Structure formats: structure tokens, C-alpha cells
Length: 163
Image (cartoon, rainbow, N blue to C red):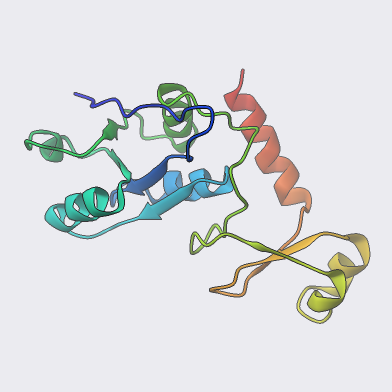
């Protein structure tokens, strides 16, 4: 039971997601890919209202929810494993995991803003500051990001999606 949302068209906006209470890790990985992905652990009625109101694609593992009439565009996620879940979303919506629409905060979903190296002095470990040139900051939670070894591991996982 899947209402296939239309894949993004060449000039259109990137899809926006709303992940239910069972899919918090999937929402985080979609943010890593640069997609607007909200995690919603609340009640089903509120979840559906938010998906409709914000024009988001609902991601769910809740079979009871699928029995409802008039669901917004949605994808029923079949696997318990986050990388298989991510692969399902990427394949079913024909997303390009190597072309992120934006850099997003993995915690709060805000679009990250570039920061000059001088602006993060004292906000990141000294070794990180001395070894990196590019930094980004979340305007909401103020978390600072840089492309460290963790990013390399994430990129390897993303490349595996393309195979």
C-alpha cells in the first residue's frame, strides 16, 4: 500500500519529508543527504495534519496508519534497518544521493550557513580549527560543522546507496 509521490522534476523543489515515530534515524540520514526531513513522534492525527499542511511526503512503518482514507503522499518503509530504509526512499523517489539540495543540521533540520574560519575560532577544537578551512553553522542550535573523518564515513555510506 503505497501512494507514490511524484519524484522531483528537473527544475522543481526537492521533496520534503515527515518521518513518523519509528523513523527518527531515517530522518537524520535524509538530513545528511541535505533533505528537509522532520521527525514527528506525536499522535497519528497530528502527523497527518502536519504532512498535509506542510506538503510533506509521509514516511511511515505504521500499518494501522496505512488503513486510513485520504492519506497524503507517503512511502511505507519496509525495513527495520536504516540504510535499507534510506535506499528505499532514494530508489522509490529517484533521488540523487550525491547531489544534496542543501547542507542541513542533522539535529534540528535547519539549513546550515557557511562561516569564515575566524568566526569559529574558540568554538571548535584547536586541532580541528588548524586542520580545516571550511565550516558551517546552524542558525538555530548554533552547532558548528566541518568535513572531518565522520563526513568521509557518511560519504562512503552514501556511495554504497548508488551501487
